[in-house]
Image 1: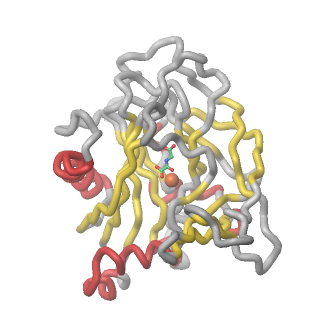
Image 2: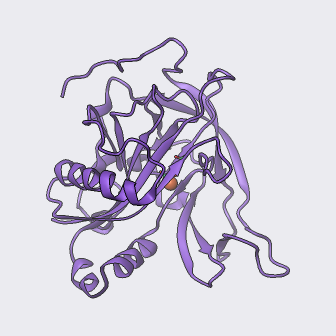
Image 3: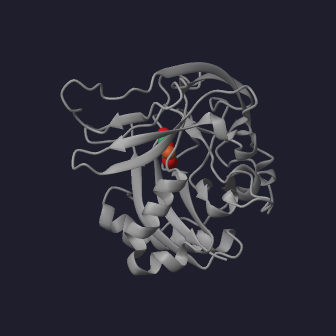
Length: 289
Ligand code: OGA
Ligand code: FE
């Protein structure tokens, strides 16, 4: 793949290494279960017992060396020069599923060696403007844990789950910006999975009103974590963000954790009147080999 600078590169786009504040979680005492109620908590309970811990972190720009990061080592990978999507508006969920999902499936099957099947289970569009819009996430997290990944397989694959759970299964987010030009505000940062220790991962119960309990992970800070972003990301680029890889649980597999902690961040270099970041992330189960 050739490495070209983004076509609309402009001096207002923040580039290069940056020091920014990332919101980590404070470790909890041993034996205390972290939780977060997704809506109103039961009487007498706080909404969450996770205490934020903002830290100033150096985030390196991977622009120009995108291909040195791989799913097996870092749990993230950059894809460049992706053909324009059939979907152009990204406002209607059914249209996104009809037009964009098949493209994401093809991308994952072609980029992930040995993958044989992709099951997309949801997507989130983020826009700064608009009352119903979801914005950027400014907390360091991983979308799933080992137990919630296996639950996903059962939930979406039903009777096939038992057999599929014997093989390799992963959860991968395909993230792209939707801005017309390069991203100038609230880029996504991710830590190389190889630099994240198991003890940095804090499983958090996500308690839904219906009683359903999911699990995500918050991250506690450690100076060994290596943080990255891709400056001025454009609409023909994708981040593959792996949240879980069953192979990482096997001794000697060579997979370094298979989970990329990530968060959006406010870049102190962003112009005050810069356009808000818009993006879509599509979450997929990837099976095989
Ligand atoms: C994700 C995610 C946050 C953001 O894609 O899983 O956490 O601000 N995104 O885009
Ligand atoms: Fe996420």
